[in-house]
Amino acid sequence: MEILGLTGSIGMGKSTAAGMFRHLGVPVYDADANAHSLTRPDGSAFADIAALFPDVIMDGKIDRQLLGARVFADQTALKALEGILHPLIRAARNDFIRNCQRAGFALVVLDIPLLFETDGQKQCDYVAVVSAPAFIQRQRVLKRPGMTSQKFTEILKKQMPDREKRRKADFIIPTGLGRAVTFRAIQSIIRQLTHRT
Image (cartoon, rainbow, N blue to C red; front, side, top):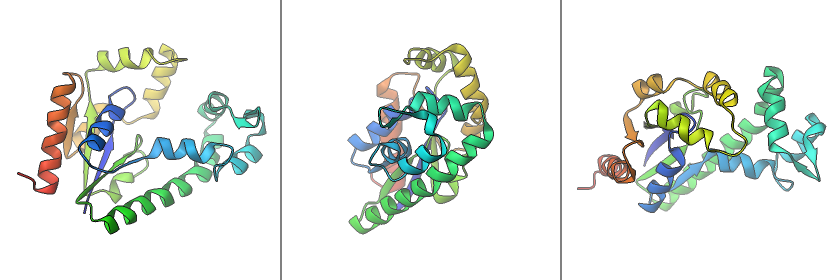
């Protein structure tokens, strides 16, 4: 079984690409969705996060915007949060891979936004980076609720630059030329990695 890491900077179209892989029958592990489920009131990280950051609990739930603001400005707090989440995310990812191997899949995708930044590529056979021109990226991101130009700039500072990600990638998936181009690029990757003709 081949493991393809899927990554890309904010606003580059990673979720769209992941959806296309799913549509084409490739199982996709979504690190962000896993992190969200871990932080729900019934999630396995909730109690530890609530104990560490009691001020971000509102109406019995973690206020994700408050938590984000708290850890975004404080590197120590961010490391503490990562210390809670990363081992749980890693365990879920390993379970996903094992289950897909047992099911006999030829290819799986690990959708991990900070793949290179967290050395996640070491668990992958190949890496695909979604990429679009900077002006398209900016337009997409600034349409998001609660996003500001300043916040976008701060997020970019914490991420590996797109050009460096592209340099490290085995495959580049263009997402700024229309969905059809993106879809064809993904079909090509699947064919290459599963040896489909």
